[in-house]
Amino acid sequence: ARTGAAVTRLELLSDGVRLAESATGLCRYDWSNPPFGTHTLIARATDSTGATTDSAPTPITVVRQSVTTPFIASNAVWKYLDNGSNQGTNWAQPNFNGNAWASGAARLGYGGDGEETTVSYGPSSSSKYIATYFRRGFFVPAGVVYTTLNFRLQRDDGAVVWLNGRELFRSNLSASVSVISYTDLATTAVANQDEHAFFPTTVPVANLPAGVNLI
Image (tube, rainbow, N blue to C red; front, side):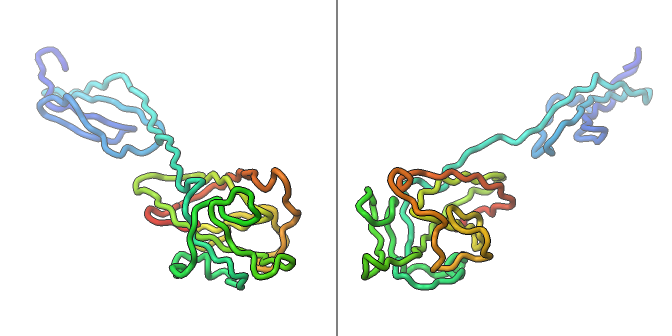
């Protein structure tokens, strides 16, 4: 303020836009939900003569806090169907009723390779079912923006992964067909240690809805 003048208003501005003002002297301001990015803060004093004085500009950067959430544990319980039927793509939709399916903890499979849950390959060991179906819900908390899903997939021999009714990625299955059917075979046979290997896949995501999602 000028000599003999009193401060009559104090303003806080971000990028030239007023955030708050006070006629009695602004001491503290809590800025809720500031936009992400870099901003310049300025305090502006107006005195009784109408003159204004700006503080030195203070740059700040607002960033998202990085979080990692384990949605599905490696020993989680899954719903599964192992009767060799053709389920098309309806089974992968969130509104599909899979209550009648069996359930069991991973690792799921057959062959005596350390499975927690044994699934059926059908009545004939020489003509085994090609496809088995698995469903599992996971909960996404509100107020968090997820940009990437990291998968650690164990499969023997191939798998298609669906998210909320849409195919997300394929592992060891043909990329030349639009939709994998229940009779399509894996690209290559998996044997020995590869039967126990986890195959990591990273998939970018957008608008992962809060609440229950379906893999």
